[in-house]
Image (tube, rainbow, N blue to C red; front, side, top):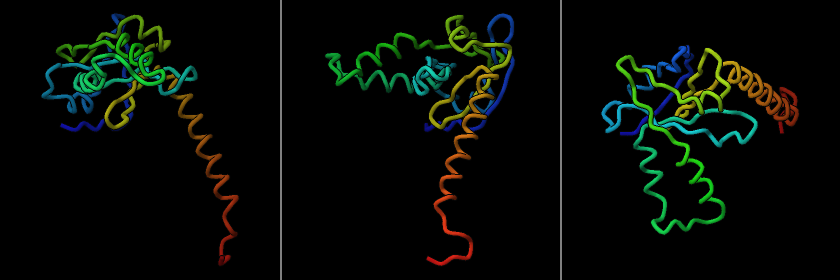
Length: 161
């Protein structure tokens, strides 16, 4: 079953560290062996941004299966795999579709009271909502800067090349 996580949602983190995973995302995970999500700190943003990468446990199983049995990997792959697999947690859904975020993840994200979920196709991300709002502003500014560069290289309207 191919999953496709799409959309952006915001939910409240309660005092017990529980947050409801959006129903749209939970529906993508139905029928898998594990009724929950696999979560690890995302490396996609380096040290600039902090997010959690989340998917079904099947994706983590596929990643694990791709590791050679002798453990010999090129470059820094071994270090990256150790980082990811050593920090991955399987979080089960409760009866209301919530997961309990381990304190280490809440601390990593600097979580306040709101969590933003962002679909990314085969996985989704969890962010502190204030941090994600700033990320969105930065992304918009970067996108507008690229548009400005593209427009600067265009001939004036009505000009034929």
